[in-house]
Image 1 (cartoon, rainbow, N blue to C red):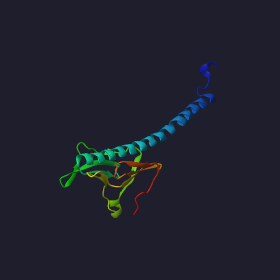
Image 2: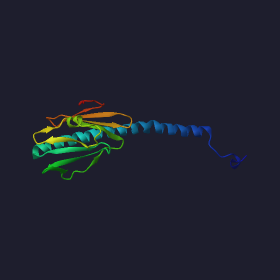
Image 3: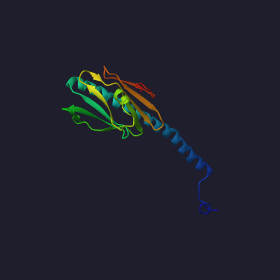
Length: 171
């Protein structure tokens, strides 16, 4: 029988090799995808920490009041400065969006603890020219419920970062 007379198709060995290659790909690729989410979570916490420290220094050096405003539902934050009696956009400040797969759980300040939780106001953290940042706790998380907690240090402008959900300010 000539080669053209045989049925065309794959042998069992060829199928096993293809399955082995696909399995190896998933063995390597899936953990990398999970690592990417962890990288995004760490990146978001570093960016927020840097923004908080920057605003603390900016308020003290320029003797102005600033606030870091959060739109929790949209996953965005931006900076505003006090201009006269109103807050306005800070210099070239733009809205920053959390990386893909990272979300705000909440932003808690002493002010927000006193307010009705059903009021749908944007949260913000105040930075005063006296070298003081409002005590606040920011919770960010991933789809699979991995949390980071960022807590402001009022007198240094630093941020304490926990790699879990920590409830520091309570009602």
